[in-house]
Length: 263
Image (cartoon, rainbow, N blue to C red; front, side):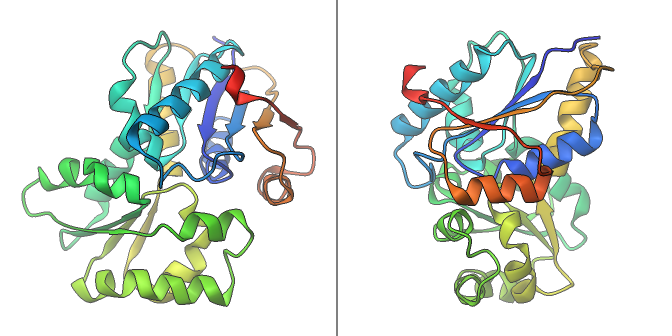
């Protein structure tokens, strides 16, 4: 038994969609979450900057004596994780578990991927999925989705208009499975579903990533059976983050600001 917390980070509030699944699957686990709200989004940054940010995020979480780290950010997982190879704790990204889940889900072999510009340009999803026989992959960068989510416009008419512009080509290609390759994107699932229709399965990174984390903790005999204590940190306190965190996770969410540049 290991009562140390699990560390989770994202560029902003999107990682809370992953936290929600972790808390549902592992109710005895404590979580320390960091949302880099002061530097969101990561998806339009250069590779060196993303790697720098991710290393700081990891260092912050490690300062809290965590037993595992979940990179609850599609951009960080796709762009930075291949360059992080010196960690003394397990680090789990969202890309590989989500890609496998999509492969297990698709019926017609046509999988769509939407993500930030950096995630799509990394080619990581394309590489993992295209290696499988009978799979055709269609990708689309959706850079406006993150600011829409971060600024409280997830369910607006603006979100629906932007979603139609981004997604219509994917719908026309006949994909039956769509990977939401950024953890912010589930916040816009209503707008996305309106465009794609009921015949397309939306793959949220949260569930496959939480399942993979559970498997990893079991294999390392690191599960906790204690009473959980959660802590949430941000690099810039925003009303939107506080509101979403309390909506997702309950009114008792404790949120503090930290200077990530110290790490």
